[in-house]
Amino acid sequence: MNAAPSCSCNCNDKNSPHRSVDVCRKEAYVDVMSDDPTRMRNQPALTTATGSSWLVVGALFAAITIATLVALSALPPLGLATATIAVIAVLYGAMIVVRFVVAARRRRLILMAACFIALAGVGLASVIAIAAVNWAPLS
Image 1: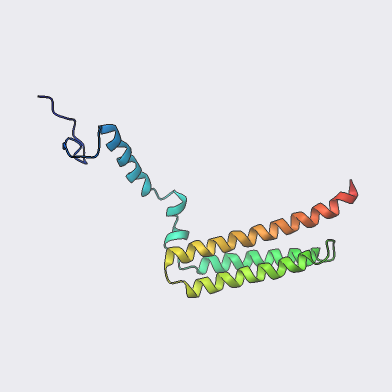
Image 2: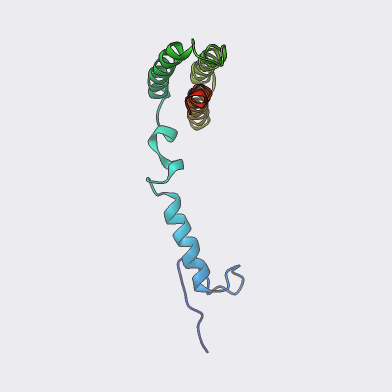
């Protein structure tokens, strides 16, 4: 009588959903990887922080972006820099609201990170658009 190979999840049990030890090894690998601290979803900034660091970094980034857009506000397309400044102020305001309203820590941090990414994306897109419009006549 050949005994089925055994592993930590009792694959040798006849009623086990696993059909081979390889399946168990893959599942064990997945379990080990889910605790990996270098994975994006396991980063302390998205799991254990209070959100204050996101507010500080967001404020610095918003201030630098707004200062850049104020310098570019006289260039065409007129109004784009001003509208972008308003959007950045709203996104940073949303970060502040999320910080103090959302109770679930992980959800709060993910929403704050999303607001920060949106803030950076809107600022970058606006600066690229202004540069593209003003670069075209030079070439």
